Figure 1 (cartoon, helix red, strand yellow):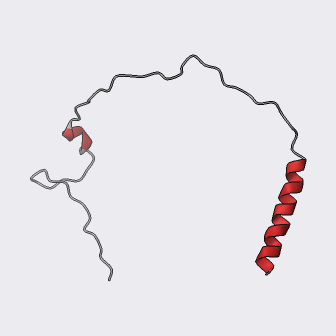
Figure 2 (tube, rainbow, N blue to C red):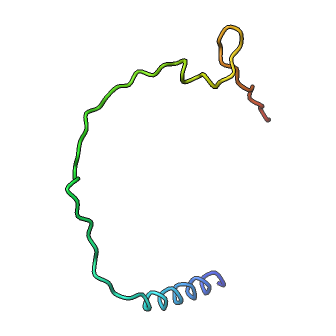
Figure 3 (cartoon, one colour):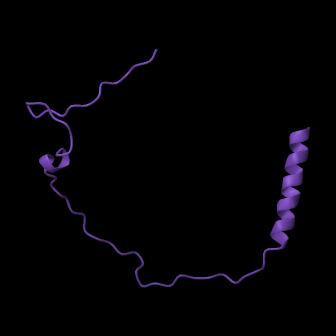
Length: 71
């Protein structure tokens, strides 16, 4: 099959390219900030701040676009 031949050619070219990559020593990232933990905190959100940019009607309800159903 043509696909198999193309795949073999790609792998062959990739293998040749990998041979050109120089061998390097591994690098390490050393830091003292390993396994740091923090306390979980609950934050109370002010609903008025959350919806202040939303369109609302006269009763304060958020106005959204009606979904368009396709069938």
